[in-house]
Amino acid sequence: MAGAAVRAGRFVRLAAPSLSFCTRFGAEVPAAAAQAPQPSPPYGSRKPRAQRVPADEDPAARAFSSAPAPGPDNKSFLWARYGEMKRLVQDLLPPGVCNLLNPSTIYANNEISLNTIGVYGFDYDILVEQYKYPKGILKYEYWPNFAVRGLHYDIAKGLLMKIDAFHYIQLGTVYRGLKPVPDDEVLEMYDGTHHIPLHQASGFYGKGPAVKQFMDIFSLPEMTLLAVANDFFISNDIDYDPIHLYKDVTDAIRDVHIKGFMYKWIMQDLEQYILHGDETYAVLHRLAKNGKKLFLITNSPFSFVDKGMRYMVGKDWRDFFDVVIVQADKPHFFNDCVKPFRRLDSNGDLQWDKINKLEKGQVYKQGNLFDFLRLTGWRGSKVLYFGDHLYSDLADLMLRHGWRTGAIVPELETETKMVNTEQYSQALTWLQALTGLLERMQMFQDSESQQVLQDWMKERQELRAERKRFVQGHPVGFVPKARLERTQPVSSLIP
Image 1 (cartoon, rainbow, N blue to C red):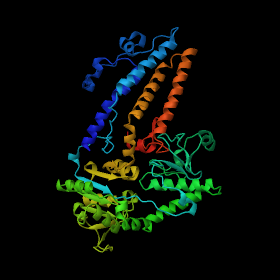
Image 2 (cartoon, one colour):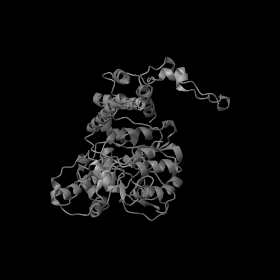
Image 3 (cartoon, rainbow, N blue to C red):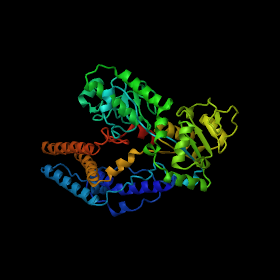
Image 4 (cartoon, rainbow, N blue to C red):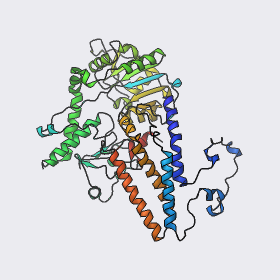
C-alpha cells in the first residue's frame, strides 16, 4: 500500500503539466515555477498578505495573461491561442507515454505505511448470477459490463441512473430496461429538474425508500436482472408495475443467498466460478510469516467458505487466520451490538458456551463488531480491512472506528486499460485544455469572438460525446466520474 501511495503521487506529478497549461493558457511556465516548493515559514513569522494589485499593473500577472485588451482582430488572436494550445497538448503527450496507470496496482487516496499495520481483515465474497423469470427472458444474454457499482434505481419509475455528489441525475446515464432515456423525457418525469432530494435516495447519507443505490459486487447481476426484466415487459407491451418487479427481483436475489442456491451451484463446479489462489496463498503466507494478525468476516456459511478456501489456499487455510467469522450478517454486524458470537464445532453445529475470547483455530457465527473489538483489542489505524461494499465495508469502518480500509474494485482494471490508450488520453487532455481556454477567453464579447467561442463549445460537446463512446462497454460510464463531478460513492470516500 505504501508503494501504491508513491505510485499515486508520481501520477499526480506527471499529470501536473496538463493542469498548469489549462490555467495559464499557453504561457510558458517560468523556471522557478518548475522547482520544488520551499517550506512555508512558521505561522507567526509570516508577513501580512500584500494588497492585491490589478492585473494590468502587475508584471507577474501580465506574464501569465494570454488575453490582451480587446482589439480589432480578436478572431485571429483567439484562433492563434487555440493553435498554440493544440501544439501544447501534442507536446505534452508524445506517443508512448500514455501508460501512466497500472491496471492491476493498488491506488491510495491516503498515504499509509504498512509498518503501522498489525492486523489484516478480509471479506469473502464470490459472485454468481442465476435465476429464472418468464421464459422469454432466457433469450437475453448476460451483459457483465452493463452496470457499475454506485448506480441508483428509481423503484417507482423503473429507471437506472448515475447520480453525482450533489444529488443531480447525470443526463445521458438514465436507462429504462436496456435502452437510454432521452434527456427531455427525464426532465419531464422529474418535473423539469433532475435533482433527487436526499430524503428520497438511499446511500451514505440517506435511507430513502424511493431511490435505491447499489454498492457491492452482488449488485451487478441484480441491476442487470432488473434492466433485463424491465426491457422484456416493455418490448412485449406487457402492462406491469415497476414496484412489483423490483420486489420480485430483490426477493429472488435474497432467496438465492438465504436458501443456499448460490452456494450449492458454486460448490458443484468450483473450477468454473473460483480462480485458483496461488497469489492468495502467497499473500496470506507472507503476512502470517511476518507476525501479522489475520481475520476473516463473511456472510457465507462455513461449509461454503471451507470448500472454497480449500480449493484456493489448501486444507490448512484456517492456520493463517487468527479469527474466522461466518454468517456475520453484514452490514448489521458493523452496527449491531446485541447479537452474540456462537462457536461452531468440527461438524458445523452451534455450541452453547459463552464466548469470552476469540481463539485461533475456532470458527464463530454472527456476533457484532463491538464485541469483536472488545475481545481482540484490535482498534484504530493498526487495522487494515479489505471489502467490496464502499459504505458498510469501508466508509463506516473508517469514519466510526478509525480502521484503514481497502476497496476491491475489479471494474477499475478494465477502465484503467482504456484510459491508458493514446486515443483516450489525447481526447481527454484536449477536452481539459479546451475547457480552460473557453473559461479564459469568455471575456471577449464582440460578435466575431462570440462566434469563435460558440465553435469551441460545439467542439467541446463533440469531445464529450467522443469520450462517452470510449466507454460504451459500460453504458452508464465509469464508477468514479459523473461528467465533471465526482459520483456520490466516490465523494463519500475521498475528501
